Image (cartoon, rainbow over all chains, first blue to last red):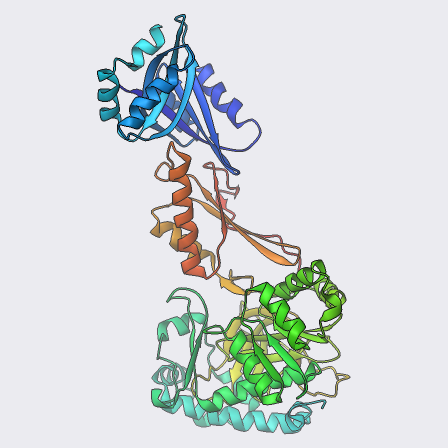
Length: 143
Length: 431
């Protein structure tokens, strides 16, 4: 029950982000979510797309260093405290979160949070037990 | 006191030539009899010790290179029984690049005397306080000037490098008059002294600065900011350390202590000896040391030798400022760096990636950056992982080189290639 996230190494240069998104857009790849972690010298662009395998290959052949990482896409209620509830469950189980980013889905009233955790299998298990819905890649794009 | 050893420093050319010839013949016999390595090299060229009688016979001897030193590491060129050696000094770098030089007590004494000549030429005497901020230890800078200062009879402050606050405090409290360090550290100290408003409390009158190349502009800056006379000094561990040559009051080049080290200028391509005044590679022959007397050692430093009469009265031949290298070695903050060492670290860290070394001088201090192209192996979706790998890379480079570069990760194919070949070194320093 994980989603494949594409991470891309980007230098802090003008136009790099436009280039990456241009390559994907030009190939008809749909982006659902995006986040950037940046340092002084470089950034890591993280993407959730409809065809991660093709996106990875496209970026690689265009000369970018990219990787594919299984992450959790968790549906939460788009209400105050919705995210906190999910994070509390993980914290109580001592599952650390490396990073997270959220997006609103087309389905009204729902948001989706991408979580990179230390142990995917255990996190899925714990969340399921607590009635939290973890999306798989395909249903993320059906919503 | 104008000179430390006037009879040598101001000897007539005839007397010096005669002395050099005698010492050369003696040294050639000494190494032939005691170092199989030299014997083999001389035998291969059909040169017997008896063939070298005077200075004119010097070109009969083969050149020695850093590769020969590597082949002979560690004891292969030692010319006395180990029991007679009392000290080693060494350069930074890996085994392949590291030079280990041996000294008898006599070798240390003559090295100290060379440094004493430099201190006296910079106006130093028994009443001076010599502040040595070169590193102590395997590096020759600290021990060399320290020994020289003892010979002169100055009060010696063995500060070693680093801890700028303490350096300045001692300088103020103990009234240092002569500062010995790299020119870039002198400039750094000057900046700190100025920013702390302590310029009025220091008593410095002169500085002896070496171990890296510097410009006349930098000299002017340091002299002005510290209110001193700044003198250049040259040396290399292979030959002895600092004091192979030194500057006098004229400040127009460094007098070579040619009663101990015979300089030659050669064409680095052909090996042909060039006439006085030609620009070429500097070669030294040690003629009075006994433990590690290298013959015709190619320094790879490019400069010019001149016998033009000097206003200081010394007759010792003068070498110009260094004008470059005939190999790819970089001297960064006084430390020898070969691009191949960077490559070795990258390979060891599993990075076959492309790299580029960028050296610059900002506010008189060398900047050292290594750009490394990101690889799928090095990349991660978390910044933490990438940073950890980057830190490991910097630590490995520090272990290899003795100084830390700033590592910058760049995108693949970001490093400029000219005609398909990557440009490995960009040296923007204007020296």
